[in-house]
Image (tube, rainbow, N blue to C red):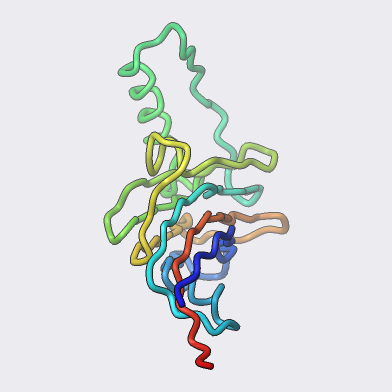
Length: 183
């Protein structure tokens, strides 16, 4: 008998900042769903999946602090002027100058974003769905979708107490399953 299960499933919490300079974590949507169903007698037939939350949380007191954040007037400046200021800033303050860590995100093995994170002096958070993965507030996936997160740290990076960067997320799923119990 085919059943329909609607659920909110949390993605595994990805906690970066170990002792290695490049860290990579993969999240395979099908495996997350299988883990959700593992203690049941259900066999997955199909799934409709919406990624509703994908958020980076960070506090990086171990990095040099960038002091010249660009001042941007989003109402008065053109998109080209804003992009130029941001690119100029990222050229001056980046992983090689020890002012940033870089997070690269691949969706289904295609690089979709590369984002620098800085020491702002306080904990920060950032929605990674909009505008980084899509212009919509949710991202539609299929059960074969996968994410890869790769963090690049500055050369000779020394983690200090309080340094953290983690990724959290949740998916809304509509699962069509077959119950394997035979009567």
